[in-house]
Length: 97
Image (tube, rainbow, N blue to C red; front, side, top):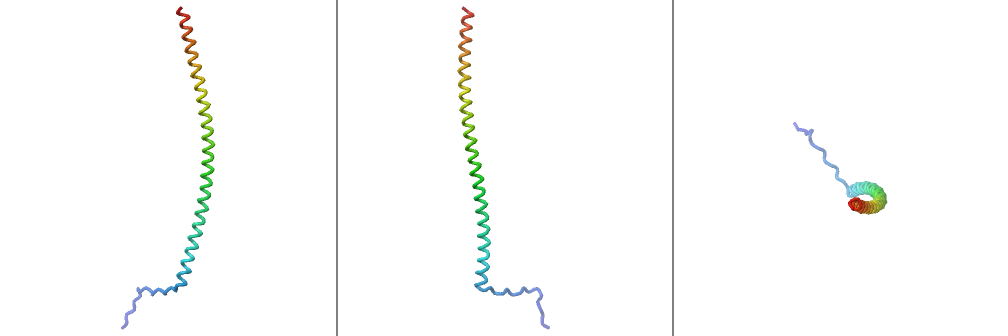
Protein backbone atom coordinates (compact mmCIF):
# COMPACT_ATOMS: atom_id res chain seq x y z
CA UNK A 1 0.00 0.00 0.00
CA UNK A 2 1.43 3.35 -1.02
CA UNK A 3 1.46 6.12 1.55
CA UNK A 4 0.41 9.65 0.55
CA UNK A 5 1.65 12.68 2.41
CA UNK A 6 -0.98 15.25 3.03
CA UNK A 7 1.27 17.71 4.85
CA UNK A 8 3.73 18.18 2.01
CA UNK A 9 4.02 21.74 0.70
CA UNK A 10 3.59 22.25 -3.03
CA UNK A 11 6.70 23.01 -5.00
CA UNK A 12 7.01 26.70 -5.87
CA UNK A 13 6.63 27.55 -9.51
CA UNK A 14 9.93 28.90 -10.77
CA UNK A 15 9.85 32.61 -11.57
CA UNK A 16 11.11 33.79 -14.86
CA UNK A 17 13.62 36.65 -14.89
CA UNK A 18 11.01 38.86 -16.57
CA UNK A 19 8.47 38.27 -13.78
CA UNK A 20 11.05 39.01 -11.09
CA UNK A 21 12.06 42.17 -12.94
CA UNK A 22 8.42 43.28 -13.27
CA UNK A 23 7.81 42.73 -9.54
CA UNK A 24 11.01 44.59 -8.66
CA UNK A 25 10.02 47.50 -10.91
CA UNK A 26 6.53 47.60 -9.38
CA UNK A 27 8.05 47.75 -5.87
CA UNK A 28 10.43 50.47 -7.07
CA UNK A 29 7.48 52.48 -8.46
CA UNK A 30 5.70 52.14 -5.11
CA UNK A 31 8.80 53.25 -3.21
CA UNK A 32 9.28 56.24 -5.53
CA UNK A 33 5.65 57.29 -5.07
CA UNK A 34 6.06 57.08 -1.29
CA UNK A 35 9.25 59.10 -1.54
CA UNK A 36 7.50 61.79 -3.63
CA UNK A 37 4.79 62.02 -0.97
CA UNK A 38 7.39 62.28 1.80
CA UNK A 39 9.36 64.96 -0.05
CA UNK A 40 6.18 66.97 -0.65
CA UNK A 41 5.35 66.73 3.07
CA UNK A 42 8.90 67.77 3.95
CA UNK A 43 8.64 70.80 1.69
CA UNK A 44 5.39 71.77 3.36
CA UNK A 45 6.94 71.48 6.81
CA UNK A 46 9.97 73.48 5.71
CA UNK A 47 7.62 76.21 4.49
CA UNK A 48 5.85 76.21 7.85
CA UNK A 49 9.21 76.37 9.62
CA UNK A 50 10.27 79.30 7.44
CA UNK A 51 7.05 81.13 8.33
CA UNK A 52 7.57 80.42 12.04
CA UNK A 53 11.17 81.63 11.92
CA UNK A 54 10.13 84.81 10.13
CA UNK A 55 7.48 85.42 12.82
CA UNK A 56 10.07 84.79 15.51
CA UNK A 57 12.38 87.33 13.87
CA UNK A 58 9.62 89.93 13.82
CA UNK A 59 8.84 89.15 17.45
CA UNK A 60 12.48 89.58 18.43
CA UNK A 61 12.61 92.97 16.70
CA UNK A 62 9.63 94.00 18.83
CA UNK A 63 11.27 92.69 22.01
CA UNK A 64 14.47 94.56 21.17
CA UNK A 65 12.54 97.80 20.67
CA UNK A 66 10.69 97.28 23.96
CA UNK A 67 13.97 96.60 25.78
CA UNK A 68 15.54 99.73 24.31
CA UNK A 69 12.53 101.74 25.49
CA UNK A 70 12.71 100.16 28.94
CA UNK A 71 16.44 100.96 29.15
CA UNK A 72 15.76 104.61 28.28
CA UNK A 73 12.93 104.77 30.83
CA UNK A 74 15.18 103.21 33.45
CA UNK A 75 17.95 105.68 32.66
CA UNK A 76 15.52 108.61 33.01
CA UNK A 77 14.14 107.18 36.26
CA UNK A 78 17.67 106.76 37.62
CA UNK A 79 18.55 110.33 36.76
CA UNK A 80 15.31 111.58 38.37
CA UNK A 81 16.11 109.57 41.53
CA UNK A 82 19.60 111.07 41.68
CA UNK A 83 18.15 114.56 41.24
CA UNK A 84 15.64 113.92 44.04
CA UNK A 85 18.47 112.69 46.25
CA UNK A 86 20.47 115.86 45.56
CA UNK A 87 17.38 117.99 46.29
CA UNK A 88 16.78 116.10 49.54
CA UNK A 89 20.44 116.65 50.53
CA UNK A 90 20.11 120.41 49.85
CA UNK A 91 16.88 120.62 51.84
CA UNK A 92 18.47 118.73 54.72
CA UNK A 93 21.46 121.07 54.70
CA UNK A 94 19.19 124.12 54.59
CA UNK A 95 17.06 122.81 57.45
CA UNK A 96 20.17 122.11 59.55
CA UNK A 97 21.78 125.48 58.96
